[in-house]
Length: 249
Image 1 (cartoon, one colour):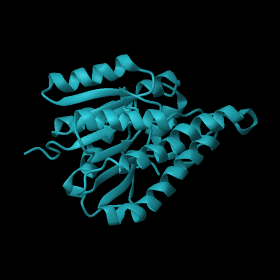
Image 2 (cartoon, rainbow, N blue to C red):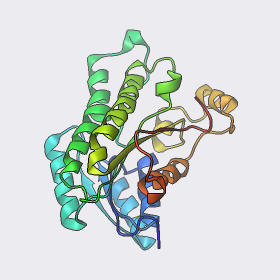
Image 3 (cartoon, rainbow, N blue to C red):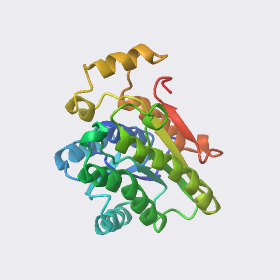
Image 4 (cartoon, rainbow, N blue to C red):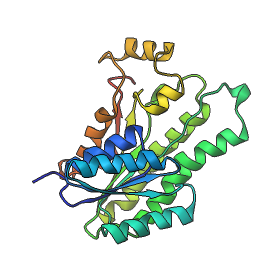
């Protein structure tokens, strides 16, 4: 028996990077996976095709997590395809690093709308669709809430909020048998970190120099932790923030 056999999992922002890695790993353990995406339809379709080619079941559903109507549609489509939800992974996120002198209102709202409001709205709608036996909510935070890198004022603020929300909701949703935990990745090699110029930069070199395990992460490193938190193996864990950064803290 696979760890997540016939469990229904919704993963936001799953068309690439960490989200795609989590979607594939949950599916490999038997979960029925909903791959949410905002705009990257081709990427989401590829993730779904990869899952199906490996014997799994998945669908892709478009939706901007900061918009109530989109999130309502996401869970309507989930219900039609697979039924009640057992696992929610709040992975959708954006980031932009800039010094305090250059940050703008648009930067603030873009990051907070997706990283914080999106997490809250998605969780709110998921609760109406969760399995009566409860389940697992996994928030994707970041190690930045601990290490506070220069130029990350807004992004670090959003991920600090994710930490706080995780702790609050673990208490609020415990009576519903829903566990709420957070994975806080360090630097991970994804399409996003390549596009942002982090890969091959001094930032990567410094991260690898200071990380006890001597490397940056890969999406699978985070996905394996997500499988654990989604499964019965972590049934006694809630309100936890797991730093998954190769020892960076």
